[in-house]
Image 1 (cartoon, rainbow, N blue to C red):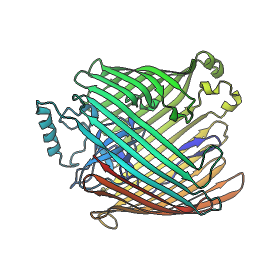
Image 2: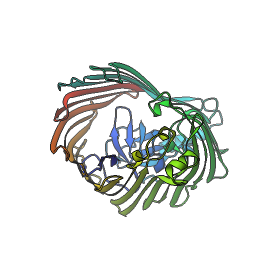
Image 3: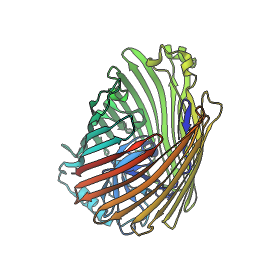
Image 4: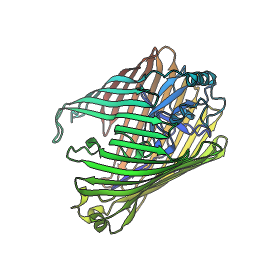
Length: 539
């Protein structure tokens, strides 16, 4: 559910690849690519890079995925074991935490009966019992991709993109506590037509991570240098600098960070933003049903010699077994100097997010979320007229219900409201999702989705159908159909478009993978077809 000045779209009835909640498996697969598994939980839901999760409900298979990247409320993971692949809508439980890799025991929260993990535990115990230093291990992946859009409209906006991705992680470098990591992407784009700010051909290379990490859990010391994403403060973004953390006790940790944010965050090479800060974290021991992690941080930002922003961040989560849980994020701006003059307040709340869920029964969960976002003054807006800040806040609330039956039927629905400054009426949205596993065949999954919104200026709806089948010979085959339509009040016009897609995701041996997809689009807003492929290998 997202809003912008003049238009806020709120999700509505999505009947499709979203499965209902399983109390012991709080994370869900939302999307699959040829290489990655995308989850609906992230750093603010307790996940961190290196965590291992298990797909539940597969009595004859133990599928494990390892988290390789986390954002605030989403994450991407890579399959590390299992006979079959995860599918959209699968639920996952925590198998082991990155910070507990030295412990052979399974982390709290794994669902019983999710799979036989005796071999994994014995192997972990064997490694821990070895007195000789462990040799470095290299893990990662490399892929080449190609994307082409063939525009059949008179505008002739044909577009091609060739890309490469590298994800490299060297563990136990020099000793058991040092890790070297690289995550990068390069792409070359070619357009049929040039634009005022973009030529027909262009290169873009992006280095997401280039870091050296020292993580000694026995001593409670964590250090990272290079281009990093601070693990306790992922919401603050990437940092070219260093992070240092020390555990004062098993539950209490203090950390400091400093550096500059990468230019590509702003799309302007002339922008440089320096950042320093510190934080305190209180983390539960993992014993008992109550689990929590709370972090309070103070951050200062400056551009050249100008103060850009100073704020306090509060984030964390609480959970009680599988019964209930609460995640929250809050940013409080401290306005001094010119910022106090422009903002009129010394302290202002610029961001608040709260999500809570409660399990009503074994197969039924209810969730309620609230978010509030306020535009804050930065050095870029020093000369901006105050009137342009009038439409600067938005807030919304959403209720969601998830239900599952017999491990085969999954149903979810939501109802939301979003308000924007300057708008007299809110945007209302509602959604529903329906998914059926092992239908019409044991290896097939069928999903339907439908959503709609009604805002002060626009209204619309979208529905789609998707079927995917896992085959031993060809991998995961999927087909889909969807249609969306919307109406704009100012021009009194209804517009509609539809698409038809098919694709294949396959593994070759233990190392190679291939993704293929094609889509045909037609309607009032779009006319053409697209093709995408990715070939890679894991090492």
